[in-house]
Image (cartoon, rainbow, N blue to C red):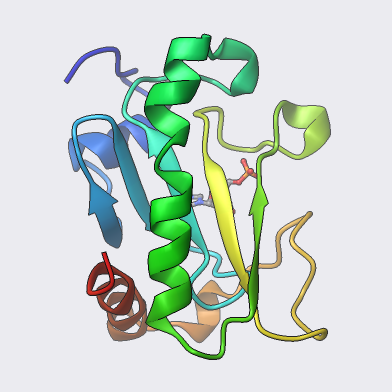
Length: 144
Ligand code: AMP
Ligand code: ZN
């Protein structure tokens, strides 16, 4: 796998050194559950090339990596009939709320007006067991 960085958390996820709940993967991108689950089904799509954020992207990178956003968004929506909409969000740079410095696109399902806002991210990790995460990931995977 080319162009990965040794100490980057998301490069470690790509290499399998840090576990994740994968929903989609090919040679170019990986999509996995965001551990914080701002809302249920909250997923990240990341390029397998270590790009810090959109300021790092060539047009070719954009075409190659961003084309998967609708595919994964549609699978998430199909995985749960209570999902009515979805925010697709990207934080570019620390000042914009970026914490992990490997480009990632947030897909955050919206079910109702009381859903938590997404930036800064609420952390619901204490509400999910490993089985819960796996069930959410499987439901999405089954719709891809
Ligand atoms: P950002 O603020 O846009 O950089 O978002 C970083 C996101 O990465 C946050 O929503 C975190 O919950 C998420 N995150 C951090 N570590 C992990 C991990 N090991 N697995 C999945 N998501 C993670
Ligand atoms: Zn990286």
